[in-house]
Image 1 (cartoon, rainbow, N blue to C red):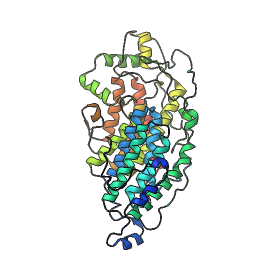
Image 2: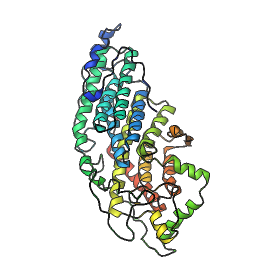
Image 3: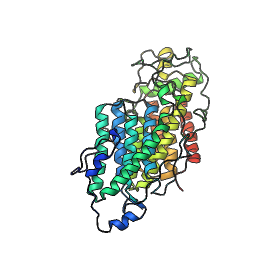
Image 4: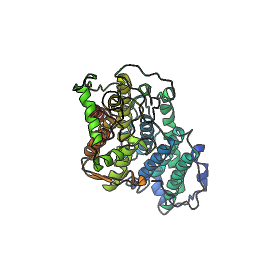
Amino acid sequence: MNMPMLGTSGVARRSILAGGVGGLAALAVGAAPGFAAHDAAAGPWPGGSDTPAECAHAWMSTIYDVVWPEGLTPPNASRVYAYCAIAMYEAAAPVLELRSLAGQLTGLGALPKPPPGRVDVPCMLAASVAAVAAALFANGAAASKALLATTYDGQVAARVDAGVPGVVIRRSLAHGRRVGEALLPWIAADGHSSVVGRAYVPPVGPDKWVPTPPNFGRAIEPYWSEVRPMVLRDPAEVVPQDHVPYSEVAGSEFHQQAMLTYETGLALTDEQRAIARFWTDNPLLSGLPSGHWMLATQQFCQQHDLPLASALEAYARLGVALHDAFLNCWTWKYRLNLLRPVTYVRRHIDPTWNTWVNTPQFPEFTSGHSVASRAASTVLTELLGSAPYVDDSHRVRNMAARSFTSFTHAADEAAQSRIYGGIHYSMGIELGKLQGDAVGALVLDRLHTRR
């Protein structure tokens, strides 16, 4: 999924990490026939408004390919994807006649407007997302920074090759950079820096979460509830329905919940194992669940030949939904601190049982895949409709593509995969789906991208 260079003849590599576009002085500035008239008008360079969405898709692939090796946690990855999607959207929104998210997202104020004269949409969004990604991965690996720079350079070179005059490119990159830099103080103030790495002592009790095999690792993001929401009024605004009362008595509702997960795991079919693997999306195997949904959206847009404006809307709205879904889910996970099925089963049913998928190191209730996937499907269905698509997100892992009749179909399979993996009770999945629906509905109610 790494984006190849798109022909960089005549363009020296310019790292956005340095924060400047001085190298653009070397770009050709000769006017094409009719250029003066074009430049005198406002709006996108001719062809800019209907530019194929590949410029946005390439950036999302690059962010995915950076998130994966950086080993981010699930909620932190959703944060990164959301900010990068917002950066692309806000750079291009004014000239694509989309509504700014300023004043709609918590704490986000007015952003710079495009300058007079013609502007190039792909250059604007490239400079904006490159500035934001550089800040998000400021402490990232050299390879991650190089990939971001390569994508930026390739996209600028592609616009040169397309005949966009140098003056338009410079103007557009400068505007995109201003938008990205204007987003950075808002991003830095979201509370993330204060929650990372803090010591955590989980509560103790027979029903409480403890580190799980085989890793027995530390709790992942126990303080994520302190991160600023995008559109939720409070991280805990959506309250999941209560799980069944904890009990160790054989035949009790809680015991039956554990037995269902246990017995399902003992009798998995090849198809169920394939589903569990396809949706595993842990930091070692992929760009995490939020990245999987970003790639699914990319593939839907490509397969249905959707224009750039639709793709940017989809990424931005999806990013906000995933961000707040993980935030809401993590808030309740650590308020309730319910033990995982593998812990209950080994204590009370079968001490030798192993799950098909390694249990992640955070509490059970509710299922993050369920909450996030249904929030995603709610938002995407409202925007893009209910249509089939093929998800080939794990091609690089040599996994077969899967076909879905709709986003809801995919979301429900993602949720069910966690039963097959052995890492959730059915109540965590079913009530998580309802929780995700509610988060998605609030995003639809509070976030508007059409003027």
